[in-house]
Length: 225
Image (cartoon, rainbow, N blue to C red; front, side):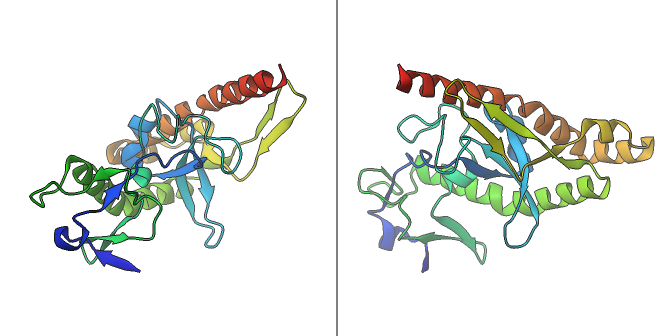
């Protein structure tokens, strides 16, 4: 059950930010692409129930595996969906799910001794608002990409030194070939909306798949040594 955040009722709550260890895919909004592209592959996938496309950062190659987290913390960009874990917007107010594992006595305080918001809570509020406003904006961008048939399945098959092979299914990327074949008026419209920057950031980020594969391969080799 969600509760509206209140310094009197929740003054003793603390949050543990070491929550990335088992997240192999974290949803992103378009406003995060330029920051996230330096650390993660950004790809699209479909919601299993609705079939709607959404974007996310890949942090591991198998469910429950994060190849980049160190003791649950990320060395690079921290997506808003991880920052705001356990926090939501309800009727334009911040609400919390007190049963979420993010709330931990060993974590950081949400309020100081005077009941004022802590720096951590400030970052959480910013992340909540980033998602609240960014989700519909990202849905609109994806809709325009789909209208121009720019999103296509991406084939990712990885071989490892232990003889294993991984195939990542259900992932999609912007097709640069389709993008470059657009009529001038369509390309200009995407440019003026800022969509071209998003498309190029997403496409460029795919190179990080190789880095994830190297990390996994190194760990496999170390385990065999």
